[in-house]
Length: 466
Image (cartoon, rainbow, N blue to C red):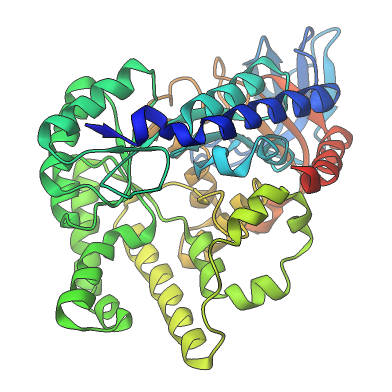
């Protein structure tokens, strides 16, 4: 097993130390904006609750939170004496949202407050510097820095990609098995595969991960047939392109097809066949539509990035510059438009076959902004065919189940971890209403609207220096 330049690419070690020092400085700056642990109960009264189970909304509900847990969830209950009361009259509550595909190493710790301000109380980090991610996760968990729960993979499992950091390179079956043990010893929550492994080490890794109780998520390797990967236990397919990227590349390389011709051969019938396999084996699907939408319409996005760009750190924006735009020509624009439309159609086809969908944004990709892009993804999923309720479940209940923690989080039920978002308007009428956040409870800490606004302003002030 070759781990990029001796475990974590030691040429990056000085960069990691600098990042940790920067995180320490930001922690001190933002600590005052992060609520202290709640010492008295929180009571949200007269709220309409969409609890994340798929049940119809319930009106005039009281939600009482004690010790970071939902203690009371029932209609008409009085607020307990001494509670911190939030009047929910005319408002709506949903479980805390999740972003199931982020890269905090590149996004920087500024992502934490942005997630909270947008009602995102949990994330799945799909590859990066384990030490840095764990440092940030510790700051979030301790309350030193506003941020979500973090489940993380650590370094990617990949084929040889010289100069690319944070990779465990596997080239034999034994290396695939050893990689699983190496990561399990370091306490990762799951294993992330990129698109480089050869078939033999990849399938050996899947088998060993299953034996050791670790889910494998990520790209389907380019040299592996997607149907075989799904049959062998690939637990969560990340990115819509993973369904056809390998076969498409082979057709372009070996048969001289254009990319559009190769994608066109991924027929509805082929999509349905994969969907049925995924359903039969309980495979999750995280299409991450928003980065592909952003790439397909990149010229307009670059010309008018919108007000949320001010929340992206200077270092993240510099990272985006390593991905230059495609030529701005009519035929290129038309090609990218058709490609995105087809991606949305495929997502809709899989949904109709009852494939279980997750919300992820690939945070760190160009013009993806922490928290805000989760709402963009929700909008695209609804446009692709999900109902607003199904989109909410894809961002709440489904992530908890995919991570193996549905018994403890993901829905608003007595005894579960208290992650909650209060909204000004009904998201079932229009998924855009999920953006209208007026309060957030994250891990039992209450953030009222003024505190959320202050978090955003602090990030906007710090971003140019980060």
